[in-house]
Amino acid sequence: MSDCNHDCGNCASSCSDRKAPQTMRASLNELSTVRKVYAVVSGKGGVGKSLVTSMLAVNAARNGARAAILDADVTGPSIPKVFGVHDKATGDGEHIFPAYTQTGIQMMSINLLLKEETDPVVWRGPILAGTVKQFWTDVIWDNVDVMFVDCPPGTGDVPLTVFQSIPVDGIIVVTSPQDLVSMIVEKAVKMAQMMNVPVFGLVENMSYYQCPHCGEKEYIYGQSHIEETAAKYGIGHVARIPIERDIAGLCDAGRIEDYRGDWLDEMGSALVRTLES
Image (cartoon, rainbow, N blue to C red; front, side, top):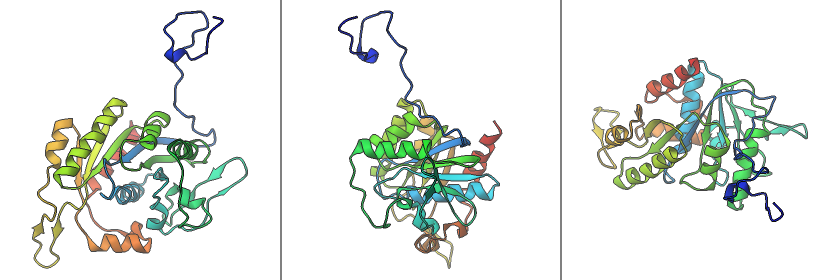
């Protein structure tokens, strides 16, 4: 057609030049291998999403899997600090090589590319989304069994890019006990459903405080509603992480790989079992 603008997706005409819809899926680098990808998301900030991402990766490594973290929270990257990784990422002019933690977890974060860790990233949404896509396509991921993508909070450009560009096998939603947060969690779950991405698990952070002396549990932010939410959406794996002073100290010291606790053991084992399928 003489007036064709080659935008078949928004054209109602049927002609010989019409093309099938093009996929938005980005190709993994030919030198990379990643078997499973799980995105860690939250409806709002401040619920401990990066903490949960880090602990899930540590748990997977403890179960014998080769784990990796793609830090998609470009404007608020915290993964390198939690693991005590301060060396810059390297490259060969064409490819980027991930950094490694003490136990061999691979990671890529914008903080590994900035001149100073405290330099702000003042970019608009499309640039942020493009950077995340490049972390998938340009980084040489070395024989990764399971990758965790630490998404920024909300349902904006970057989570949308992750769902559309990366072959996500499932998402893990992080929440805290407040009713307001539970409502926002449902938004994240519904977004995943809209993108045809299954919800693998639900993690409630800051679920309770357990007295180290008497063992009594105090529900600082109110009683949990995590089972109701999981049942409503058919989410099979649920975990709770308490308010734990030692965890905060390990994060500040860059030693999250030393954490002790069985809160994520069931979910972690289930994640590793998916590698068998």
